Image 1 (cartoon, rainbow, N blue to C red):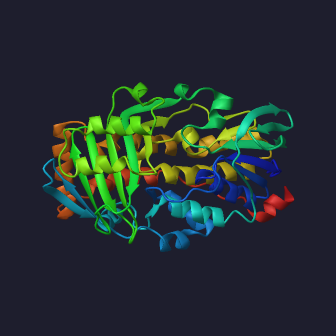
Image 2 (cartoon, rainbow, N blue to C red):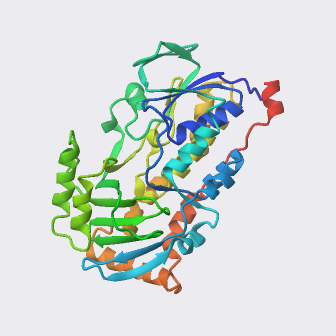
Image 3 (cartoon, helix red, strand yellow):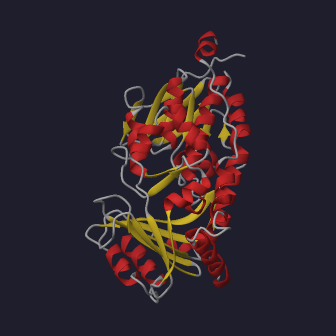
Amino acid sequence: MNHAAPRTALISGASIAGPALAFWLHRYGFDVTVVERSAAVRGGGYNIDIRGAAVDVVKRMGIYDELKAVRTPPQTITFVDKDGREIASINTVDYVSQVNPEDLEIARGEVTTVLYAHTRDDVEYVFNDSIATLDTHDSGVDVTFTRGAPRTFDIVVGADGIHSNTRRLVFGEESRFSRYLGYTVAIFTVDGFRAEPQRSTMYNVPGLTAAFGRTTPGGPGQAFLAFRQDDPDALRETDFDGQCDLVARAYRNEGWRIPEIVTAMRSTDDLYFDSVGQIRMDEWSKDRVALVGDSCFAPAFLSGQGTSMALIGSYCLATALANNADHTAAFAEYDRACRAFMVKSQDLALSGSLTVLPATEEALLRRNEVLRGLSSRRPGGGDLGAATREASNAITLPEVADAADRASG
């Protein structure tokens, strides 16, 4: 096997998929540059999950124990009805034990911090910049930047999220690949807002959810709001005040603590607000440019698989590039290795709404019965995690090309 591979790679995006890909490409002998439009790697953010086969990826990276040490402490989630009455209460340890016992729930910022720490000495990071144009030819990709000088790379990879600039430049407008799932989400932190440590509460009515809690000791309270929005155009070019108004209208008739949560949103400085959707593409590469993570297979938060998909996709792409001298063959191998897994994980989001966002009264009653079964450990409670367990393990990771083979290639 010929292991000669492109030696220079530009990665757009320094969230999770980008640094994870940089880690593996450096290990395989590439000279790697990561360009990021933000001024630094972004910390903070909501909790994410590393599940199933993705746990094996971070173990192969040698960072599992480091991530485990900063994972979110176990917490209790109490589900309430519109009057604030408890429906069921579960502990996240119970849920994880029924999915994959080694899975990690962890603040997104902890993951980005660890990945950056393990790549910053070996990888060139360029902050406050982004790709302006890409011109592919037989021997490489000529890249111009919004700020920096033009450069040429053997390959370019877009790891720049659901609204990927790289995808737009190479494959076309986002509307060609986006699949709107009919919901809007708002996530924000609120300092000083009353919340018990390691305890969250989730409120549901059909087509609408609200959750609030404090997941880390001493940390701020964090609110999560998601609601049915049939018209995605209502979100376009909406500024902060308009976003708050849209949320306020959606929740205007709701009980529990909704009024004070919606009021607190207007004073936050870290509102994440977006439509809930997926990116589905028939091809993840074109010429010498490939995509990874949310830029090409964003699953939506309803799957709980986004971070795991980013880690697994980055590993599969890097391994394919290490094993193939020709980028075309490498990109094809990358697709074969993980497309079925990515599609299965995306499909999980379409059923994941049954747990977080039941659309009808009947679906809500059915979800509540499952929750009661889990909280009381009655038979059947494990059904809540069965689909996640299956999807998160639905891939056999390709093997890493060994150092001796790469050197001889």
